[in-house]
Image 1 (cartoon, rainbow, N blue to C red):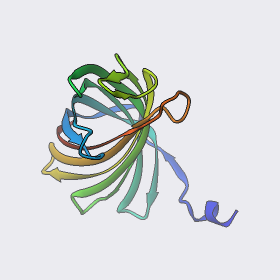
Image 2 (cartoon, helix red, strand yellow; image 1 turned 60 degrees about the vertical axis):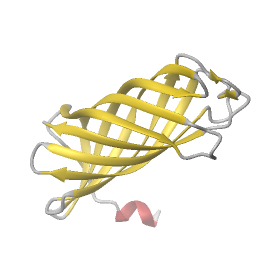
Image 3 (cartoon, rainbow, N blue to C red; image 1 turned 120 degrees about the vertical axis):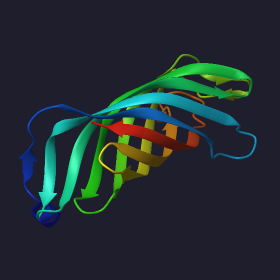
Image 4 (tube, rainbow, N blue to C red; image 1 turned 30 degrees about the horizontal axis):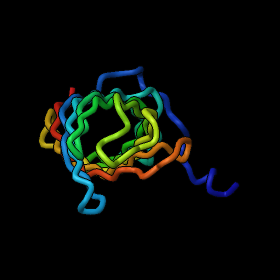
Length: 168
């Protein structure tokens, strides 16, 4: 395949390393009847695999872990995620792009009339990070949570989340 030859060679970083930790919170972006909020703490580790283009561009693999609160329609639940993501960055530019997919566990799946169909969900996200100096980062992500059709109903939930984190 031609597109495979366009990818730079995979390089192995030193080892699994703690990258950042922080807090994230936001609100649903679905229709106006979906009034959900989410708040969570998260930790990210750099995985030992990355791709580099020249001296400046890097695609870093990461492992993300989060635990927090999801509330809406008069009900509340614990929410937890763990899964891989990738971050595209440039050495001399403070913005980076991020995307990932995480298996998700809810402590309840019914929120009033809104039923997510299962305690087990999947959360995909795409976002933008802004590094403020060496240790601090602001972030935005758009995320979608659903049970991927493994249960019925499967209404899904779209969220806008904003983050602040400390980079190690």
